[in-house]
Image 1: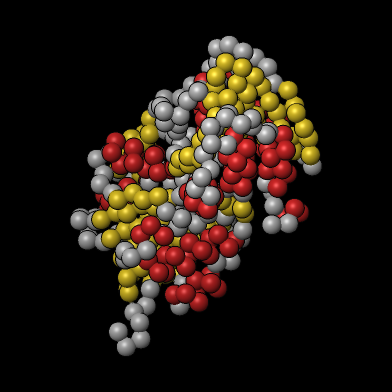
Image 2: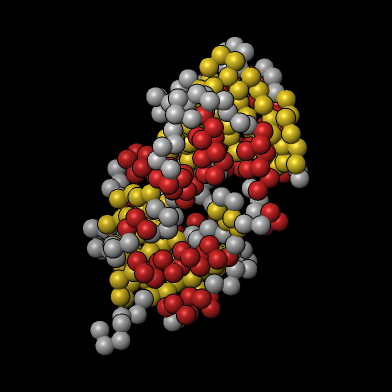
Length: 364
């Protein structure tokens, strides 16, 4: 991708040039681009190891491509929101601060990574000013007692700190681990998770989608891009014998959805999926979706259209889909191409819920 259109280009460049691990080193990479990680794995050689952690499924799959392309690389990849116990004793920990869904998630994973540094091990962080690299530098100082800028480029910087003693816990907001969410006459005890329901409340768009959602007995419901799972959870309780499937590409969301379903006694099939690829052969009578306008480092109305095309493919003939979107996003024309008739079933000056039905094939 050209430099001018790739928001990560200079972050990746700084990480590649500013961190060249020694042969035999053990490196923990947190949310770092696959091509950078592959370069580090080549540098540490057969006596070293790079453990690359990704909470974003497409990012993890890119890491897997690099690992499979060059199987001799000492590279271990993990799709997870938390570090496993056996990932430890690192000479270097490196993080792309733009790769995490919230400040809380970033601070938690970096604190966990810093605790796994060997004595005198190095923590590197890279990112742009507008993503908070300056304030994160102060966090690194509190964490390890020191932090120094190493290089700057095009509004980006890379910062390094050395472990010289015990890791100081970072102060996070004092929040209870759960909160109660009231929806109609139902109450849900929700597990708080980084980047998911950070404010402990239902956002207006999701609330509008839930209010508009019609669920009938026996429906097979897909909560597409489920987040914390609340839409699917409401659907499960809205009628008898409802089967719910949830998909998301973010490990934080998947962990939250699983915890919330378990916490509320709701049965659902929950899958890591880039839209619907993990459940491509399944068909549903209802799809509910709040299509993303931005994902990770990408922002485009095309993202929402991708979810709408996937919903069309996932529906059984006669099945219905509900999409909530920002008022300014002109999804109606694309939905008409896919489904025919489009109905706005709820809306205000900020959001709208669009309902569609999948037609049976001609002659079917």
